Amino acid sequence: MTRNLLNIDTSTKLAGLIGHPVGHSLSPYLQGRLASHMGINMAYLGFDVEPGTLKSMINGGLAMKAVGFNVTVPYKKDVMQYLSSIDPKAEKIGAVNTLKPKCGSFVGYNTDMPGFCRALKYDGVDVKGKNVVMIGAGGAANAVLCGLLEEGAAFVLVLNRTVSTAEALAERFRSDYPGQTIETWSLSDDYISFMKKPEFSDKPWIAIQCTSVGMHPDDTNTAIKDDEFYKLTDTGYDVIFNPSETEFMRRVKACGGRAFNGLKMLIFQGFRSFEIWNDVIVDDEFATELIPDMEELLSNN
Image (cartoon, rainbow, N blue to C red):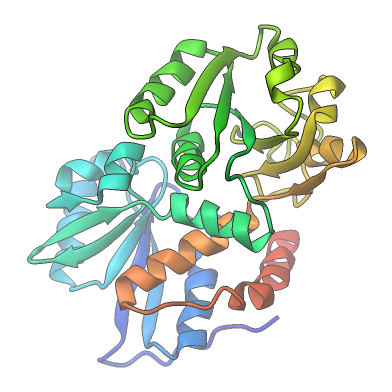
């Protein structure tokens, strides 16, 4: 595996990750590799920000003239109150994960959505005009739903344990995408019969798994256990990347579909953050080199 070797000097740009905790994050490795690949003198550090100190961290970042930050749990929403402006897509999604300084403050962006869209394209998954079922209505689902609509999905069915949460998510996007349909159902209702309706029979479903169910160490679990669901699924995409093959993915494959994990989404959201900070474009092909190295990093940890 190629390791990034930093040559820090007085011209080194500072970027980093704000969250609590941050010790498990792959972002320092990813951003270090990007800096080396692009020939940019940038150091990326993890900042474990204790509750109640987020504002101080933001002010400190400005004082240090940091080129930017990523933001992870639990601060993706809380950080928004300290920003001078927020990108319209990030505002609609309701979460910010990337900060860039501008005129003495920070501007907020969401790179999860473009990262998800780039991952789909990289894997050859086209949702334009397709029927998509999305499992979950929590944190990741906000960016995923926005991405699906941006990419032209004709019909999105949101399944969630609490249908009111799914409906609140859908309602935020309906007015901005009037030509596309968002339906919500509870996971405890008969959504299988709904998915089998004649109007959906000409297009197999693409399924996006947005919950944390099945994440390591809960490797054998999945939010949906009914094989009938997977028989209706042509393609499955799980936002989880550890384990590399989730139970959701195994079930999709067992029923003849193709399945992908969320590692590329993580990689491409990192690409987009790096591009925002440094005003560059990172070639998607660099992901081909990164993917096996990051898979090895995950397996060793």
